[in-house]
Length: 119
Length: 108
Image 1 (tube, rainbow over the protein chains, first blue to last red):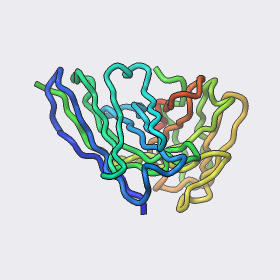
Image 2: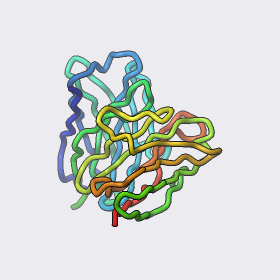
Image 3: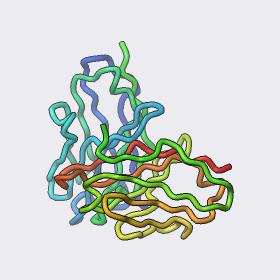
């Protein structure tokens, strides 16, 4: 059974750096074709893709947020970490991590974690 | 702004057929993925690739494509199908992922 779970702070101050961890089970981050992505959703708004890391460590970032994002993985811990710098209130959102298969779809999602940016 | 466009909201009577569309240039070259998001829940994949359904997704969900527009059809809509539906795909370069703005479906 594949599961993903996001963890991290629920509240960050403006200009701070956000660090979110996605802990996975049921698959390996080293399996050919596998990827883990991060997607966010501001309250009442649409999904926005942020970043993806592939099994071979190839990293992709949303062009609009590229300068603020870093995605890494630690297969030994079954974790994928996303950092986002210079947080702003407009970054308030539920952040999801999701399992990308070689079908290129996000086939399984975590429950999401709500991050509020406020002073 | 999204490279994919969707109708903001649609409604259908219980048991009737509903088609949700997604339009974008990249859809001519890349598959569309459809995600269902019920209130308060995480998105869930309902359609991927060439009209494939993940295990557990009812066969009333199907997909099609014509040019730059793809469709998710619900044949015989049920009350539990009331949700937001997002299309997703690659951007025109194929390098990034994009999501549509979502369609809110109401079952009457």
